[in-house]
Image (cartoon, rainbow, N blue to C red; front, side, top):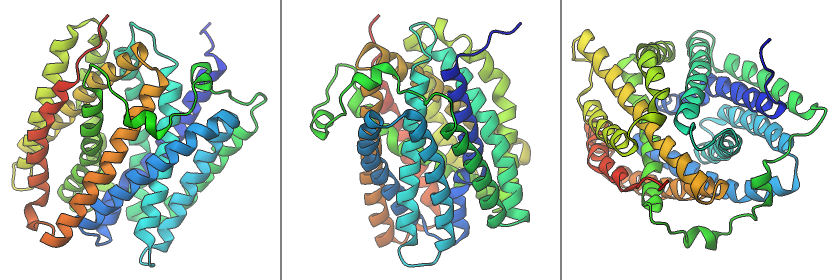
Length: 391
C-alpha cells in the first residue's frame, strides 16, 4: 500500500498544480498577448518594470500578512488576485490599462512565487536539493504545458473570454478548497518565528558568496527568458497562440528524458564543475538565440531550439540547487526573500531604463531582440561569481 503524503505536502501540491495550470492558460501568454495587441518593446519593458516594482511592494506586505493570517487564507487570496489580473485584460485600450495590468501581474507573481518557494523549501534536506528541484520542475512543466495547450487553443479558436471563464471557475474552486480546510494551513515554523525583513536589512545584506551581485543579475535574465524569448518563439509560430503552445510543449518533450536523468544525478556530481558547465551552456544558449530566425532549415531550427531549451533548463537546475543549498546553510527563508527583493528591484530599474532607451531610439529597429540576446550572452558569465557554500 502506497504511503500517504503528509497533509501539508498534499496541500502544497494542490496549490502548485492549480496555479501551474492557471499560469499555462493565460499568464504564460502575457508577453505575446501584449505583442499581438500592438504594444512596442518599449511598452513591454515598461510593463516588466512596473511588474517588478509591484512584486517588491507586495513582498513587504506578504511578509507581514503571513505573521497575522493563516497560510490557507494567503493561498486563497492568490486565486482571487489571479482572477483580478485576468479581469483587468477587459480594460485594454483604456487609459492606465498597461500600468494596472503590470501592477496586478507583480502582485500575483509575488503571492504565487514566494508562497511556492516558502513551501518547497520545507521539503528539502542537505542531500536532495538537486533531485527535489528536478522532480518539482518536471511536475510544474507537465502541468504548465498542459495549461499552455488548452490556453493556446482557446485563445486562437474561442477568444479570451473562454480562457477567462475557465480560469475563474478553476480559481474559484481552488479558493474554496483552501477556505474549507478542516484545519487552516500553518506557516512553516521557521518562517513564522522570523521577524519581517526591513528595507534596512535588505540594503545591508552582504555575504562571502557573491549572492547580492547574482541576485541583481538574475532578475533581468528571468524576464528575458520568459518574455522576450517567448516573443521570438511567437514570431516563429507565425503569431499563433496555438502553434506557440504546441511548439513549447514539443520542445519540452524533446529534452525531458535527458533532463530527468541529469536531475537524478546532480546531487552526486562535482558541484563546481557542474555549475561551471551549466553557466557556459547558458552563455551559449543566448548566442544561439541571436541566430534563430525562420530562414533556417526546419531540422536545424528545431535542433537549435532543443539545445537552447536544454541549456537553459540545465542551468536553472544547477543554479537553483546552489541557491537552495545556500539558503539552507545561511538564513533559510530570509535568504529566499532577499533574493526576490534584489532581483525584482533590479528588474524594475533595468527594464525601466530599457523602456526609456527604447522610447527614445524607436525600439532600436528590427534587431532589438538579437541585440538583447547578445548582451545577455556577454553578461551571463557573471553567474560564476556565485560561489558554492562550504560543507
